[in-house]
Image (tube, rainbow, N blue to C red; front, top):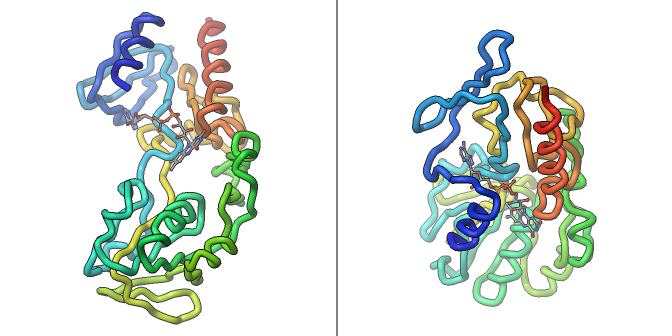
Length: 254
Ligand SMILES: Cc1cc2nc3c(=O)[nH]c(=O)nc-3n(C[C@H](O)[C@H](O)[C@H](O)COP(=O)(O)OP(=O)(O)OC[C@H]3O[C@@H](n4cnc5c(N)ncnc54)[C@H](O)[C@@H]3O)c2cc1C
């Protein structure tokens, strides 16, 4: 990956400043200059592209901190392979794509329970590129969940995965499901999704409705977030549409 990035840097003539985080952005007065706050100090510039990822930070339920299990309790972003899960029985919270894929892998080695709040529509894996990201904009509310691709709930049940309603709360080693039943899992994996990486962008940039990667702040553009653009841009193939649109906007700016 490092070699690849070096080749890209050389090809397009940019120099990357690694290990620096954007922490805030300000437009003082009506001038064209944007002030970007970073962990290495302030940068003043006319154009800023927020490309910090629509799924950048693990999202955990509020009750996660009240849970204490004998094995491990980890977010799906920290799951790499079955031997990470030291206990025989594991509860996976979340019936989206990550939850299903991890359940499928662990079913061969563990006793797996999958807690599902909303059963999602199913699509063949081959349709991922065309079907992914079909969510309504976050700012407009009414968020439609992503379908699950490849595997589905019925196939997992045939593979021995026990499917339950969502978990509503936890205390100590015990979790309570929506139907008021309880369980004391050996380990827990939170496949509960991600938060967007736009926490450093000012609220005035977040207006309802698709804006094709632009924001109300002149010179601030956002790449790869459906809520600033359109469905599907939070996929590897989809983000290029935002990138191209932003490059044109910047070239055309007075
Ligand atoms: C579990 C999962 C599975 C996925 N599977 C697929 C798939 O099969 N196919 C597909 O097309 N897409 C998939 N995606 C989506 C795909 O990962 C994204 O579309 C793609 O990574 C978006 O690229 P990006 O450059 O916009 O953001 P990212 O790849 O998220 O990069 C954002 C970068 O910004 C950095 N950053 C974050 N905050 C700051 C800050 N404040 N300051 C400075 N830097 C910051 C991060 O460290 C990161 O390097 C998946 C996503 C997830 C979470």
